Amino acid sequence: MVSNIKILVCPDKFKGALDALSISDTIEEELLKINPSFIVKKMPMADGGDGTIDILQRISGGDKIYCRVFDPLFREIETYYLSNGDSAYIEMAKTTGLSLLNPNEYNPAVTSSYGLGQIIRQAYNNGHKKIYICVGGSATNDGGCGALSALGVLFKNENGEILSPQQTVLKDIHQIDRAGERYQDAKFYLVNDVDNPLYGENGATYIYSPQKGADFALMATMEKQMIRYSKVFSDFIGDDKSHQNGAGAAGGVGYAMLSFLNAEQINGWKLISDISGVSKEIDKFDLIITGEGSFDKQSLSGKVFSGVARLTNGNIPIWIICGKSDYDITNLIKYNVVKIDVLSDLEATENESIKNTKKNLKKILQKSATFLLNIPSNDKTN
Image 1 (cartoon, rainbow, N blue to C red):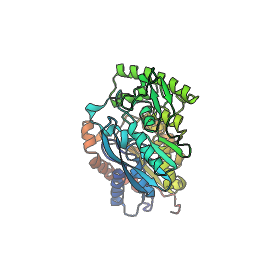
Image 2: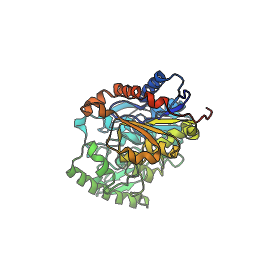
Image 3: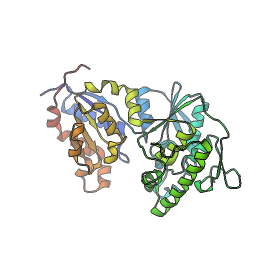
Image 4: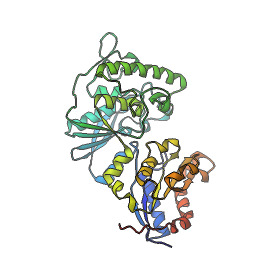
């Protein structure tokens, strides 16, 4: 039995159940119960959605800067962004996220990304010249026009009348005026985990709006409006970025950031792994434990697992722990996935599985003692 194996614990959140920080702490606690000689490094991960900037603060420090913005339904709330030197890290979920609404308020036909634009503007006005915009978990499907309104873009109707931010819906936009600040002296980064275009069968509306409250009839209507809006916007900027990878992120906010702010895209997992330094020391570990709430084919494209698999290049065993999954582990052998555990297998219903996430996570670790104690060490120095 080898006792000094080095384990990297790098899960994403289990959405609706447990955040990545808590999952990492729980796994470490159970690992050290099995063998106190294990060398455990915790690196909670994120894809740009809920909890991303809290993880970044844990890794690299920085200060929370509190401010007041509008939520998706134009109610004033207090939120924050992370300030670290000349960089600001903004989480859309904390300004115009789905988690800020009650389920009976979900309606992407009326929710707005205006609050995101407000906090971007405040970060810029506070002197930040590198602004990272983490766009997961949005409640909107407005093509980012709400955020752009807060940044000084004027949207006009067919009569040339300026639409107020609360009136601005895609069907009413016929003209665009680049009034206000231009933000040309700042560098913007779009932090996300998707490569969807703005519209089409894999676009923002058809892929993401159902979870935000849209039925099929509403999706069809919003899709037509999104296509028309993109044509108006493309004429305005002299370029069509609607089919660029990531344009469909956060209900089209990706499109707005790419078009208006000339944002550079970066995956959430890459941002965290680069800042933490994990990407440079990954080959020192004997085992990687990762996972997320729902493991499916999307996990192989831009999500945390895909990033971990890319970093290890198949050279380090990976253990996946997830909330639910119907994915066949045989398809993961090429990534050197040696074990996969699904928490929902331990409960009769999904609700019970979510409720008992922490308890079942501990149970799975406890049952894996034999597996863990037989992981060979690669004998690389720390």
